[in-house]
Amino acid sequence: MLKVILRDGTTFVILFVMLVPFIWLLLTSFKIPIDFLSWPPVIIPDTWTFANYKMMIAEPMILNNFANSMIIAVVSTFLAVLIGSAGAYSLLRIKLPYKLNNIILTWILITRMYPAIATAIPYFMLIQKFGLLDTRLSLIITYTGFNLPFVVWLMLGFFQGIPKSIEDAAIVDGCNFFQRFVRIIFPLSAPGIIATTILSFLLAWNEFLYAVILTSVKAKTIPVVIAGFITDKGLEWGEMSALGVTFVLPVIALAWISQKYLVRGLTLGAVKG
Figure (cartoon, rainbow, N blue to C red):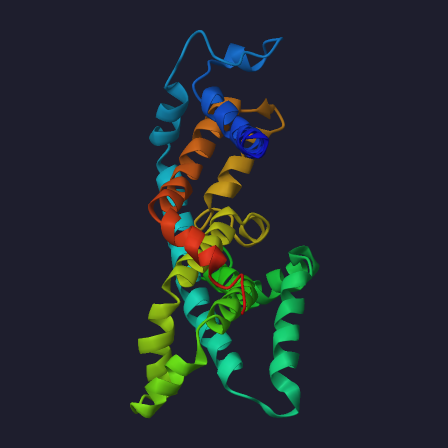
């Protein structure tokens, strides 16, 4: 009984700590300006207003910024998962000489470990040289490259959990390398692929550093727009909160729809026997 109480109590505390910032953000989006400056802070507003959401909708560029975020995140996630999954399977099943498999995997891991800001300046100059500044393509290329190491290592664990005997049976039936990957490995790894896709999407959806460096007007994403509400005249809490709530909703919907596959995928390659 004590274990159950401790487990449920711990779960409640963790959920409470995680949900409080979002609840505060949600309540702030419905407050009037005077509530932002009140002391003690107003938790539940006496006067509720939708003016912050109306101002957000009335701004024509906001819809374009949302479209930028969605297109860039979806396309870069698709490319990263597709290329990364194929790369992980190739490194797992094709044995290269001189232990090149381990060397390549280590190099891929190292590229994921160093801070993004370390390459910001030369990367900006490279994108500028190719004339891709302030374009969706520049961020798609960037996010695809940054997500590839993450996808390769995550999918490698999922693929290792698939019995080799299944592939051997496919080889007996005449399947070549590509057919085995498409018809056998990819379907069996569906939960892991879904989990990897969601996590990769989150990384691309929330990315701020390169979005603010490589874009200015046309390809600006929502994280950059939200940061733009911090001005020299103060913080526009209402519009920032309303846009923040709206920005979180697609992620919540995605996680809610695919929660069964997400949990299963995160535990698929956890235990090796």
